[in-house]
Image (cartoon, rainbow, N blue to C red; front, top):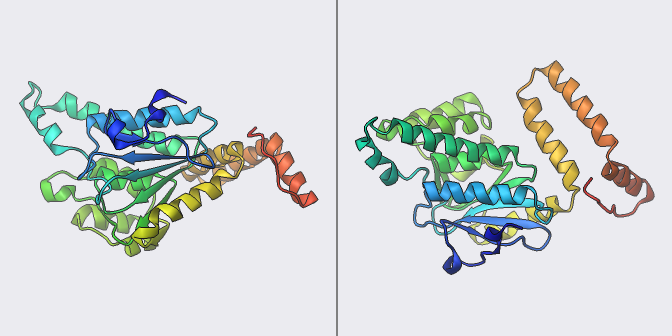
Length: 276
């Protein structure tokens, strides 16, 4: 595993993200650790990208959880970090473009990651923080969580968070959040498909880990196949989606883990995955 994953405590932390080693069952927790706002600063984005990249090729990591330290999940970009660049010769254009591209790369890394990614949300997830939630494969939230894309309040439409949001909830629900900027409750977020489940705050970590450990028991090769195909077919026409997934299932059927899994089912035994 990359050296960054040897960090165990906030006191040892050299960057804005707390990264713990894979827990029992191959679950890695990445904890945003820049309270109270846990903003996606330059350092936070760089650390998150590094951690995601390191986990990609680590066979010990089977599922990733993104959580946060404190009472606020993530407040999005650090406006105090952005604002001084208005004094640049180009009024910050180059800096803003680079930062937004970097953030977009991180979000795509979550979606394109071969390992399932679960957002564990307590407190406010706003703007690019809400974008993390929408980008994750699953999202479990506490009863204290809230979600919003409030850019319109400060003259800045949440255009990049809109990409992930509009791919997770129906258009009118997405537009309501984007146009009003108002926060929604976790129960409403679940109703519109932004999150999977709402739980009491004291059980949030435990239940999220239960989800992660359950998924981690599956063949990582199968999960990689399926996750990639899910997002690919979602952007296709109906006919193209069926043609693509038929090919994916054919290749999947030929994989050793599919042969083992089907054989185990027929023999009424527990499969022994080789992740291939």
